[in-house]
Length: 502
Image 1: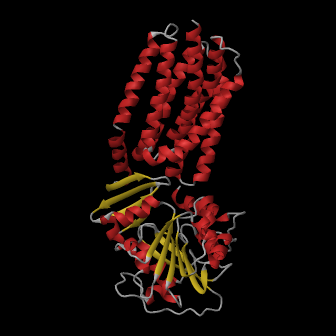
Image 2: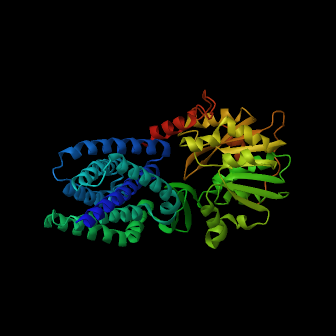
Image 3: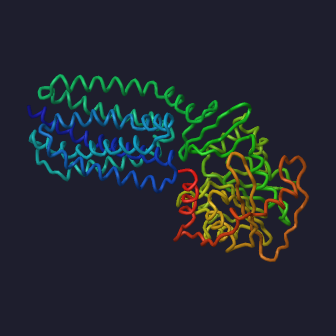
């Protein structure tokens, strides 16, 4: 009898660790899905954490009304296995079917939070009921907090790089069901056949969904993207999807289109060639972002280019567009050129530590939709970048849409203008709409346009002249400077796009 009691104690304390890991993993999956589908990762992670913790508080309070702690705990684990395990699958399905995200995502999150909040009080009651030696509630909490540490380390290092969000949710759902099964066996004399049947059916359903998670995910992706999916890979930083339709290839990062081969030249040629044409010298060129290599391809059209440094955060993306022949062909195998050095690093961290000097800097960075990305459009970042440019160095950045996010565009122009004399300009790209860029040059440097390289599909002197003309819907507005302490840019960006598309 003593051995059985001791075994029960060990099992229940071990269970505390396991359920803590699973609960936090569900929270992290929900936050990742939310930021993937709704954007603005800072806002979505904040919302998810707040809702989840509040729901856990409700669950802890509700646990007092559970008559039998063992039955309540097993039922909670079955519920977590089903709801938590299938939450990502349900959310993606709802988004693909009807475009709904908030209701299924937060509905599942609240349910998971309530059930997770019940776990520790019920486990503590069970330990007390079985007469656990020298039982102390803080021991249970210590193990619970240790589980949170394990989950927070495991999620970005092991789970995200190797499992889809759907498969990860289902795998941890089975883990909760395994806890329920072990507890069922340990307290088999106290639990009836109904609970056993519910557990068995739940295991069968979640296991089947996990086995079929790959084709299920493929079917959802096909519904989401509509085109033929050439590649779908979750990297340590983002979801990378490449699609093909009628000979056109598209790249999506976290669901947002990055280029369409049908019109990407209308983006990359204006991004690169005006700056290269105005640079008195263009031997050393820095490209930040643009891991697909398209901007580098345009840079290499110019004679006199001796070295190009490409700084992009995600090594998986640069490897794809360097090593995979069909994707590398899209950038003219630019990333295989011996003059090109690829550096996988955070642009802000890299520019602060870099020592090299460049003649041209081309910033093909993601839109400033959150605080992390907004750092790359701040006065502080531009000040650091200015130290990396030669005395006559030219810089250009993509700056979003002056039509859909007008204030955000002019915030970028105002901020860049703290270090350089700026030339804002725009161009129509069918995949994005009217898109804007801001070029900076040292004060006093007279703008001159060198002859453009042969073979361009879109950029001409006439196009360049027209690109600098803004109308009443896109022209300058009063705009603050974006800094690390104020960050008005992501707020303006979100407000502009929300006004048109939400």
